[in-house]
Image (cartoon, rainbow, N blue to C red; front, side):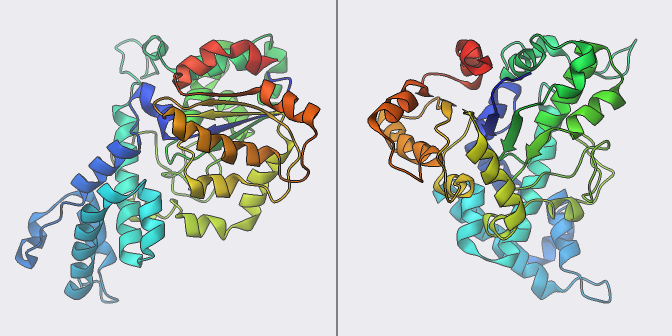
Length: 358
């Protein structure tokens, strides 16, 4: 249980240690999924889920394929494949293009990629002869997730379990359900409570996905299609893909943005895990007025020293926008300001665990 109001801002890099894709790997997978046949006569030869979903989108009111519309999706697929290598992220590419066919195809490919990645990750439940499939927590020894759980259960007794997410908010920029799936499984295992009880506790946590998710887990509330963790079938790819939001779509949902920004405003510490610090995402987080002077800890593994200097300014802006701080307050801010480009997410949780729990 956390003593200080804490916000975790989670990016794609936070999933690397369990096998989830980074931005570059996601781009590579999306390009493979969008390798559509160019020749119209070969359309029926292609049976990938993304291609078939695009054909479904191409149907007219009579339920027949509109070949002109289908061709637009083939052209859009070529366009995405040709331009993605020049994009900072798939989100940025879709936002910059403002094309309905590009947007729909990108969402389909992202959804398929993420569900496949969940299934291939080391978090995916392992079959057992004696027991139902369950997470092998021993396989997560190099992941930051068990360290997160340790920080949550430190000093927390089972009769206090309902308070485990007190003072805690997660802003998760990933499309997957890794965080929720892990936390429910970990709480159930550690406290020996039922899956249902653990899931209800996780449902009560403040977890925001600015760009949506690939469906909701079977035990999560909401109107999104129900999709099991890493599911291979049993869902409509078209329907599930609608749960993914572009940057333009997200910023139009002002109520959700306000909740995210309010959590930043009230935070006493902000912890960035595997976050890329892209301008559009920093803009989404940025409250109009802030004077919080939060403690900041960030994993910036692989980011150069010079780029970290630029990141410093945008991160500090999250905390200081209202008044120019006095010299004393400024010193206090910098004493609790850490952007570590030598630290992975695991390293941050391991190296700064006492600072984070303070």
